[in-house]
Image (tube, rainbow, N blue to C red; front, top):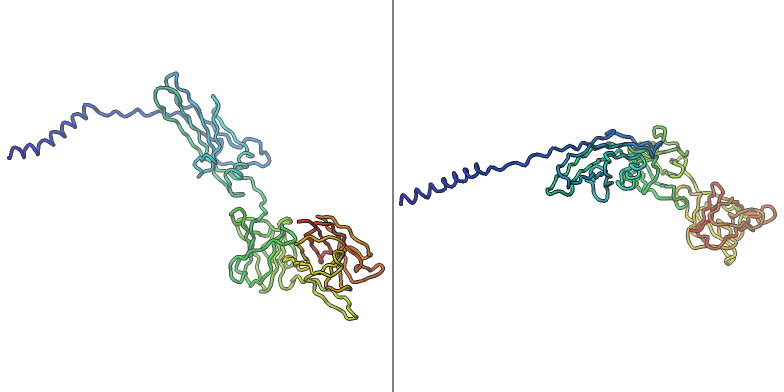
Length: 402
């Protein structure tokens, strides 16, 4: 019994010694390390795209030949890739080139990088970015696999500076809003390049943030410190950092941003815009009318019909109609009576022919004879006109087909 126990204990030890001896006789040999030769350099690791020389090379990458592989059957080829850092040379983002034999250099122009940044890599406007360039040497043919050689280098890029002035959405914000939360501004009916807002502000700072392509910018004074130029248009620009206008007096404010002209106009309660007010006689009694809506009268029935003119948020003296098409001889009045104060094209009692997408002078009054005869003067409106802007402040009227 003791002998059996002894064998049970010693056999594993003998097996271990045997295995160790076997390992000594068949020692694993490491594969010799490949001596790679490929080297990659860039003409600069910091570049600024040149808008004045767009088609000139702005960056050049050079690389050396990879290692020589013995044997006539091996063929080496070089592939280059350019991409934005973080994209990991994805198939939809990388600029891939299979280089010709004997080519060991790759250059790119400012125009190429600028276009790819905007269209392929979707970088933020005016935001610096980092590119990475990779060269891969790989072998085909031969009896054994040859590991490729890979080199990657990064380059910091300052983009071409552009004057950004566009918006998907625009807001009034800052401590001057009563809630402290941003309030969305609206595009004006008469001008899609113009945003306006009318509402109450408290003493505090007013900011105008803009959403554009998923990013936030701010409308800020092009010059100056943000002092409100009450009722006067001020040139503005867009940037990433906010600049505030200081609101001192609480009350109702009107804010108008014209994107085409790059201006902002802020109206305080002291410079508040008011609707037009006209006076005219009716049965010997002077009528005083605040013009907030209009009626039309003309050849489509020779009866006064209310037309849905809406005051612009930018200016209550701009009335905008957008609806069903109207046509024929037409004038616009402040009341639905025959002797109403009217807006029309002249005072001579003749018609003013109208074309689409055209602005005309506007005249007004209540005279009905001789050289003062607006009541018998009409616009001759062609079919299809369904958009009309009556600008009483500047005495202009615009007709169009929308």
